[in-house]
Amino acid sequence: MQNHFSDQNLIRQYLDGNQSALEKLIQKHQSKVFGYILMMVKEKGLAEDVFQDTFIKVVKKLQSGSYKEEGKFLQWVMRIAHNLVIDHFRHSKRVTMTRGTEDYDIFDTIDMMEGSVEDNIIKKQIHKDVRKLIQHLPEEQKRVLIMRHYGNMSFKEIAQKTDVSINTALGRMRYALINLRKLIEEKKLELTAD
Image (tube, rainbow, N blue to C red):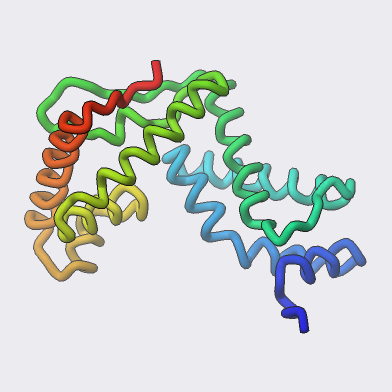
């Protein structure tokens, strides 16, 4: 028996005229979709706009019948959100990169930039390579780095969550970045998409 709140069931209910089914569908996936958008654009107001545009597009595609149910609704929504983020950067031509200091943060290199399809493929590969390298870090460093860059947590939140001082959390982050830089040099990875 199909779950009453499954994506497929909610989509069907919405297309049959039940507006509250759409609200349930949005609420069900809101935190993942919004979190992803916010991680990409790094600005709450802009993230809210892109999130709203994402679901406007979702509604239009559902109503036009162009969504084909394959049990991958969330992936489909995330792809729409991703494309809207890319469009935003393409229109604004925003490039945010910093270089040079000893405290250079590897994640600044892979901030979203305008680019061709080829550039986007390269950036995806860079993200994939960095995620693999993160797995080689000591557990405490890996945890802080993931909380900071993938969980968008402040160092205060990380300190509370891991039950350490803010200085310890900062230190672990610093060592994680140093070790990550060493791993990149050892693996001779090229982390630019220029």
